[in-house]
Image 1: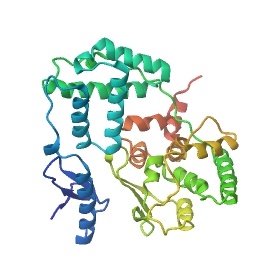
Image 2: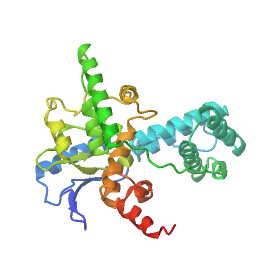
Image 3: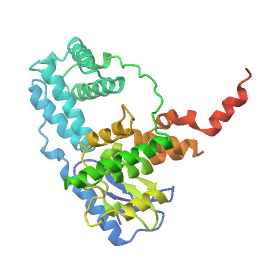
Image 4: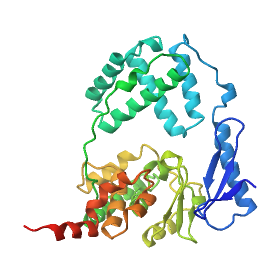
Length: 345
């Protein structure tokens, strides 16, 4: 049976494709799954496996191959091993570098050329340190892949110096600001209804603030992943390809129960470009400059202020490391109390 229980007590389903690595998925449950449930998850995993390029179909590249052939081979290799979103971002970074550097062969990607590309775009596009480091990592990994296969002798991207990140405290909304945002969203929904367009903004904001989900996760949220009986939302394939479970609060439950559940997606009218509508609602509430991500920060900040430990917040947020969650530590009542006890002046 392609299911097993880990030492933490949770059950997982796995498949072993002929090409590529094993795929597995958590059922987020400690009870033994039924054959029907295993079959459903198996089918999802096989669909993911079939959508990936097969290793057998990937054309080998060698020294002297054109830059276009090398990037194509590497992209196929990445798509077979990472989530589609991550692979797409890596490929876009390489194509931008290819266009900017202008070299026809991989040998033209010298340290000087890479450094000029990185810092020119950092100045022109105002890249933040995280963006700069993400592009540097994509170049470094790609050229390392080329070096292992004998396409190049050295990896010039290893010399790229990462930019130091400026530590910024997360921006979040107070209860009064939340009320202003909800009122602004309600007015915007009234406008949408008046021009016969789908109404979704207030529902989106309430769910976003009540779950801390990323906008991409909400775009892909299905009713099948909303368990109203056990009050759990299962986020499928979040950032980094990880699943996680989020409790449904009473306020979020009220929103979900009032929504139309006849379609497959919870928010069928929400798209990746819905940022503009949400920003407009925030602006109308006098809250600028903020985007939808502020709702995620608000969710985490209010949990920490209510005394929820950082490890639990990290799990709910889907953070890969606790270092990310530590940005909210200053809001913890215990942290504030310990600092106050040490203040002698």
